[in-house]
Image (tube, rainbow, N blue to C red; front, side, top):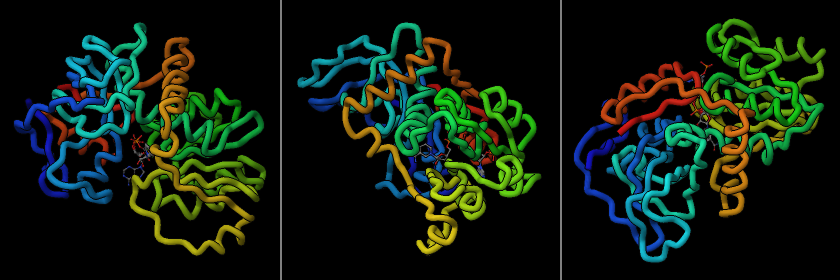
Length: 322
Ligand code: NDP
């Protein structure tokens, strides 16, 4: 089969489209023929070695497709089932063997590509809004990169939970998308000082929670946007890693909380995975959540897709089509 493989950490030219051994499903796995693989920022961290994996590897943690065969222990799934997954490796490929504990069946009314678009970023937005800091009416939230893949979904979920939401984005085009997703206010953080804007918009009080996936360039000011006992949710580092901090900063700035969440502990059990996936699919079916597929690239053009994402262009989801 054809797949994208990384033999050395580095730039996007390390993404090689080449022949790879066809996967064979183990006892608790299903062999899936992919209709789409999702592109996520973590794929860039893997490619560059910021989050190192053993080489060579096939990147990609998300996809959707049709089951071709199942291992001997599998009873919950059968050939022909349309399934999607997040946090399963080797997704930039024509076929992948996925552990069935990671699979969810795609409802009839949800397209396979739509499912691929919503698993990793949608379930992330779900745990951020409902578990990391469970948003409620009356809460105020600042969401950075609000027109990105996670951003557009998180804005919608935060609004659905009743929060007042401010998003930051880099361009007018992205500002429009964030507003359409429901953001009450949008700050162009490339032009205005978002800390000053948050103070102005909250009458100096600050927000209850900051969801910060940008990292290096936003972290310090994000702490200053919080009200006393506010929650700093650092969940990514699109602009680079945050420097080590002295915990005393958290007391000086008002007994703040700091967390650095990642998916695995929030998808630790089958029940938790299905709870979040059923919510997300249910909201899609009910028209209460919109996933914006920004663009698709053929799998062979994964390099162009990475360049697009690293170049700060994503306005929703990017898919790779085998
Ligand atoms: P996005 O589509 O949001 O793309 C990243 C966005 O970050 C850009 O579009 C850009 O928005 C913003 N950005 C700011 N500075 C930079 C920079 N220097 N270089 C590139 N982008 C920059 O990607 P995803 O939705 O896939 O991921 C968003 C973030 O969430 C990532 O940091 C990712 O690692 C994290 N994440 C964390 C998870 C977890 O479990 N902890 C799970 C999923 C995602 P703008 O132009 O508006 O500034």
